[in-house]
Image (cartoon, rainbow, N blue to C red; front, side):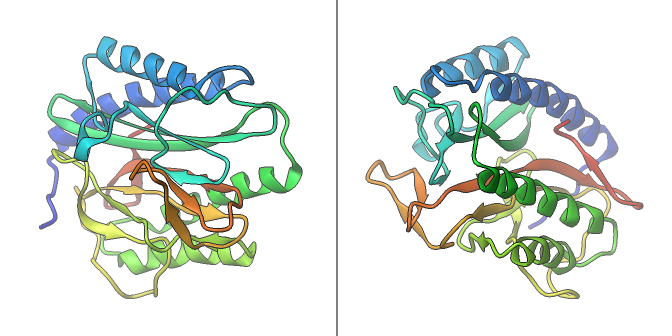
Length: 247
């Protein structure tokens, strides 16, 4: 079942989403050589609590941290720990916050110091594919149109699309219907309606799109250990387009 949010509920989500965006951006700015992923996680927890929220991920399905910190070949769900970020790494910071009863979910992949230009292009294409999908979002449009727009950008760059992992609805639950793959056919899928709130999140690989799940049961990596990038916003469907809530 897809839950349509009222204007008042979307206002609450926008308020929480803006605060979450500030925390995400602070973490991204701190992702420098020498810091550990656990240090980033500790800061995220403090900032979320100070904002009057609760970490969406902590305890969700048993996940043990506030953020997902996914480095290099890790696609998503990396568990923060003692790993020290090194010059040339990339890190995906995925963070969620529950605020006044509603979740927001957002992610960004950023360079740690100077990175190879091919890796920077991977980050740029991942972000570009998100915005291509965003342009298609409005009342009355099929989700397949959004998914197809994302797919075209990624495939035109000859990168891999992770197919087992998807975007999703967001609201009183962190993950609601519908499921939103990053590939699809125009004119298919759910028809978007004003008041729907969804998270679009392309996950793109430099090499193989096939995945492995690490021994910790959470961290998902590329099967060939190629670099991977992830970019996500929570957004509300409006009659004329999309309102990004996590900015």
